Each structure stands twice: as C-alpha cells, then as structure tokens.
Picture 1 (cartoon, rainbow, N blue to C red):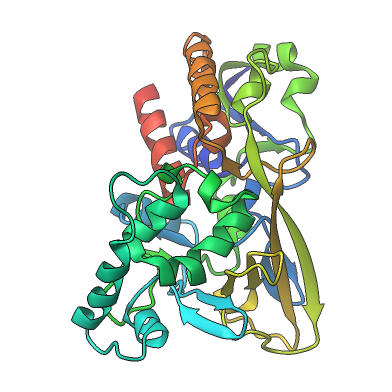
Picture 2 (picture 1 turned 180 degrees about the vertical axis):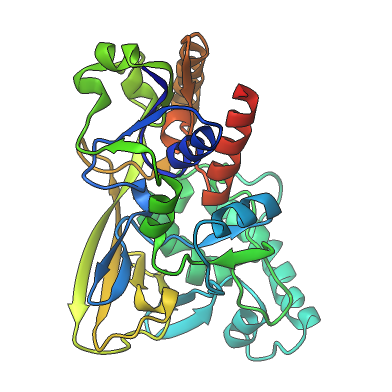
Length: 364
C-alpha cells in the first residue's frame, strides 16, 4: 500500500513525489511514456541536450523555487534573448529600443519611440473588438504587422481579426536597450539537461514507465491512500462532458554538419513566408561543444488524437466545460488534480513547481 500514487512524472508529479518522500511517505510514480520528465524531457544527441517537446527556459521570481531546483542540479546563466525574423529582416525581442531604432530610422531615444507608437495607437478608438485591434491599440500597426500578426495567425490557424482580443492582454514595450526576454530575477538552464533535474528529484522513488493509469484504473485506485493525477482533466472523467480543446505542435528535427547555424537558441519567424513559428538551435542553451548542431522547426497544428496537448483554447465553450469538470474533480475523494493538463491551465515551469509545493503543504 502506497501513501501516494502519482500519475505522471512531469514537474508537478516529480515535485510532489520528492516532497512526500522527504517526509518518509511511500510513493509510486507511473507514467504512460517511456521516459520521465514529461514535456521538459531532454535527450542527448551529438553531445547536445535536445529539448524534445519544445524549448524550455527556466525563469522565476520565487526565491524558494529557484533554491529548490538548484538543490538538485546546477543551473547555468542562460539569458533568453530571442530574435524575430520576417523575410530578410531581423529584430530583437521583446520589443525594446533595439527593435524600435531598427524599425524607425529616426528613433534614438525612448521619446522618439513613444512618438511613433502613440501616433499609431490612435487608429483604434473604443474597446478593441478582436486581437488585431487589441494589438494595434498596444503597440501600433507597424510592430503588429511585422512581429505579431503572422506569428499569431500561424499559432492559432486563424486570422487575427477572428481571434478574441483577450488572447493578447498586453504586449511589453520596453523603452530600454535590453534584449532579456524575461523580467524575472532568476533564469537559466539546468547543466546536463532537464531530464537530469527530474532524475535527481525522483531519486529513491519507485517509478514505472510505459504504464497507463487508465488501463487498470480501479486497481490503481486501490494501491494508494491518495492519488495525485496530472493527466488531462477530461480524460479522467472519460470525456463525460465533452472533450476540452487544445492546440498542438509538430516538430521537425535536423542534425547539421555545422558548428553554428543561426547564432541564437531561439529565432521566431513572424511572417507567412514559412509555415513554422520558431527554429530552436539547442546547443546554444548550454554552449555545448560539438562539431554538429541540432535544429528543431516548430509547426503549430490543430490537436488530433495521439498528439501532445500544448496550449489551452480558452474560449467561452472550453472555459465553461473546464469549470464543470473542475466541479466534478472537487468531489473526487482522495484524488488531487495538479498541473497544466489536470487543471486545463497554461503554466510556466516555476508556477507548476510552486503549485505542487503549495498543494503538498496543504496535505501535511
């Protein structure tokens, strides 16, 4: 008999398992995949730790979370400074003085940049009715068309005029020459990859891979006093209220016989001249020494059965359905629902860990 059966070995499950084990609890972790670490899984290819499910950059303002992850592995000082490319033009992200001075030749000061942006914002009067109007009201038409429109339309497979305004609640405008994407105090990549981090978190804990909770759900429920469930919320209830919708991603990975292909870990492609939204060059995350490089091209796609679920679709229908499922979940005795799949919520990595910490403390 286990104290906790944890379904899923991603960050929520691994954090909860680690804290419970430290308190002397008997824990079993199961995962339907053939590897631990969920979507932060990294695989070593040609001496490079490849982010198999898309780029993951750890960043946080939670000191306790930063100290927690660093207690398992050392993190490097990687700073996320993505590049945006449209056609043959290249711009710094997020929008900052480097971006503005390249877009407008007469921009040298923050006042110059604001003059252009504020003038273009006037195009929208009243409450924005769609994503396009919302974006223009925030950053103006020039930046919207170069750096927002194409990327967003590829991401959601819909025209920006047909997308709700709330998807872009804000677009950061930084009036400084600083290309650091995140404002958080702590940032980096675990040296040796994310798989190493989760391996350390699960050290001394029984883990069973290639094990699907739903293949024998009644037996698994008998194995532990409590279940920590991190899988899809609607799947737990056998889709009784309908399926919650997601956007997915398709990856195309290439190994090239060059040491440096694009000079940056992340390049966003913001135009429609290509179908992918990003190209990731993994070696730059950890300055890996290799005479080859590994690239991943990221293609947003509609979710189909068997694909990974990445982005929630938070329209009225899905939000209402998710709330109904959450009501069912609240009535499940001895089952804890946690993580982005089980909560139908987009989570940054630090927020997942913080949520698992808080949930465990409530259990104690």
